[in-house]
Image (cartoon, rainbow, N blue to C red; front, side, top):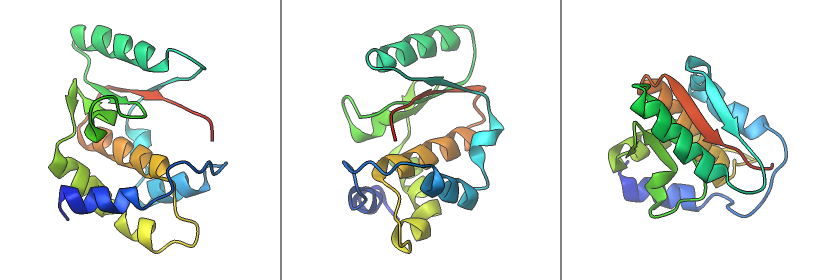
Length: 142
């Protein structure tokens, strides 16, 4: 699977629909072997300023020599900027590989995950594979 195919698959998932609960996300994380358990996470929530707080924490921690994974939403410049490790966006190949690892769960489901849920799973998988020290995750409702 290439990046264009991965994006096309992700773009077919519900984007604006809020689906309460963690069932779909947990199902994706099960498929990936629960990569979110491989590193500590700072969750940043609230009404305003989440992205700014994550960006500042990212800069401070990286300056201190910590390997940081960053997950924010929505994208600011490019779809790929939602997930970064050590300040670098995931490559198109990494996005494609992460999407391919959960592809069956995206297409063969009676209750498909939202695009946000799929990207969250891709982020955790990338962070686990990238052996980060800590994840900074902007969280939302739903």
